[in-house]
Length: 134
Image 1 (cartoon, rainbow, N blue to C red):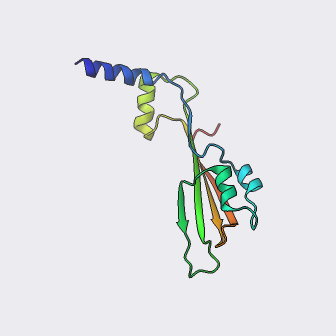
Image 2: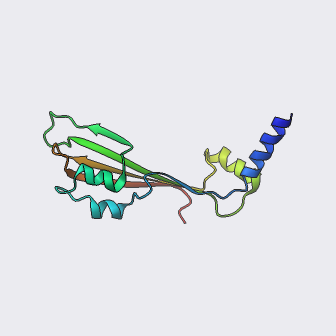
Image 3: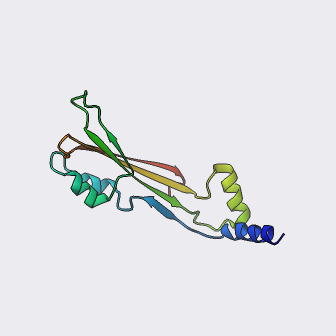
C-alpha cells in the first residue's frame, strides 16, 4: 500500500515539472554542417573531432562507383515541455492523446558521406518537427 501511494505521488508531482531536454549530438546544426563539412577537404578525423562518434555508420557498396564508401549519421532530438503548467491531469491527458508529455519534438539528422580515402564527399541535413511550432 505504501509503495502504491508513493508511486501515485511521484506520478502526480511529475506533471508539474517543466523539463526540456536534448539527446544525441548537442552541437549539431545545419549552419555548423554547412560551414565545417567541406566537400573534398574535410577528413573523418576532423568530423569526429567536430561532432564526436557517429550514432551509426554504414559501409557503401563497392560495386557502385558513384556511391559513398561510408556514411556516418548524427542525430539530435529536442524535447520541449509545455510552456504552461498543465497539472497532473493535463500531463496525463497529453500522454494518452499523443504518447508524449512534450508539446514539441524536433529531430535533426545529419548524414555525412565519405569517399574511399576518408574525405567528405557530401552531406545531407534534415529536420522534422512534431507538435507546437511557436
